[in-house]
Image: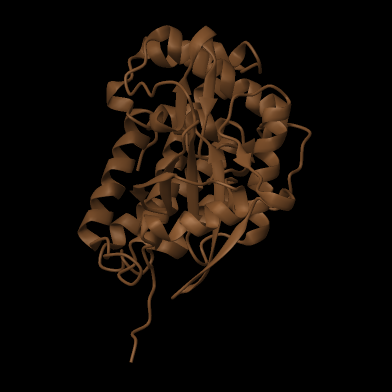
Length: 321
C-alpha cells in the first residue's frame, strides 16, 4: 500500500533521459539548487549551463506557464535581457513529467550571466530602474495570454482574506486591521488613474543579475501578473528595505522615470504598493505553508507578520488605525 503524496522530490539523475530525448544533451551534470514554489535544478554541459524548473502540481495552469514563456520570448526578441526558455525538439518548451501527486511540468531556461548584488550601489539601483521601466514599456501593448496573478487592489485583498481567515481566527484585531487597510487603500486609490499592465511580480535582489555595460538580466517571471505598474516599484521598495538607503531608492526611481514618467502623486503611492506586496506575500506563504503540502505556518507567526505590515503602513504610508 502506498500513501498519497502531496509534493514529491525528483532525484537529479531522473532528468538524464529527459534532457537527452528532448534536447539532445549528453554527459550533463545535474545539481538540485532550490526547493520552494517550484523546484530548480542547474544543468551543466560541456559548453554551457542551464536552469531546469519543475513546476508544482496544481499551483499554476499549463496555459499560464505557456503565457510566461511567450512573455519571455517577446522580451528577449525586443532586446531585454531575461532568462529565456529553451525549446526542445519539434519546438516544444513544456515537458510533462508524471509524479506521484500528478503531472508536473518542466521548462529549461538559459542561465543568467552576471552577478547578484544584495546591496547594490546607487548606479546599479538606477540601472535596475531603467531595466524595469523598459520591461513595463515593452509589455504595455502585449498580451501573452492568461497569467496566474491578479495584483489589482480588490484581487489582492480578496486573495489574502481567503488565505488567512482561518489561521487568524484567534486574532480578530488582525483581521480588523486588514479590513481597515483595505478601506483606507481603496479610499486613497479611488479616483486615481494608474498605469496598469503586466508586472514582474517578484522584484527581490536574487531575481536580477547585473551584467557588463549597465545591462540588467531579469529572471523568474513565475509571479508575473496584471495590475498597477506601481506594484513592481512597491515590491522593490519593500524587499530588503532596512538595507536600502533613500539615495538607493531615489536612484532606482530616477532610472525608472527615464523610461516611464512618474507623477508626484504616483511617487507618493509607492510605499502603499510596498504594503500591498507584503500583503500578497503573507497570503501566499499562508497558502503554501498549509500543513499539508508543507509544514504549517503557525498562527502566531502570521499575526507577527500582520504587525510588521501594520508598522510599515503607519510609518511609510502615513496611515492611522
